[in-house]
Length: 79
Image (cartoon, rainbow, N blue to C red; front, side, top):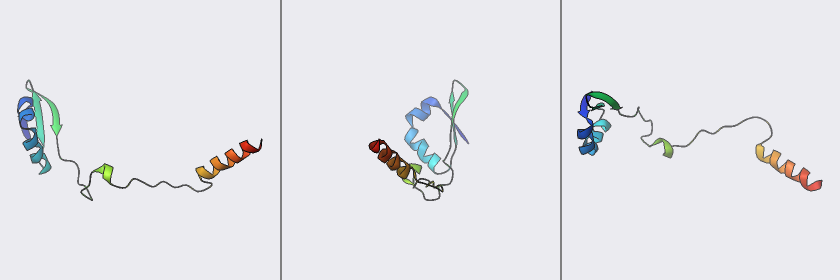
């Protein structure tokens, strides 16, 4: 783990984040006290950011929500 001051981190953030990408962990200090730990993200299976990966598909047994909504609309239009 590498310790850096907040001023150094601000001045050299791009280079330091490149080090983090390579596996280095940074401890950012302000006035001699630790304020943040910057560490690499856990092992990514696909190498893509989470927002680009497919989401979970949830499924349940029984009638679908769209079928229930259509049935309710039909019932309301008859009354």
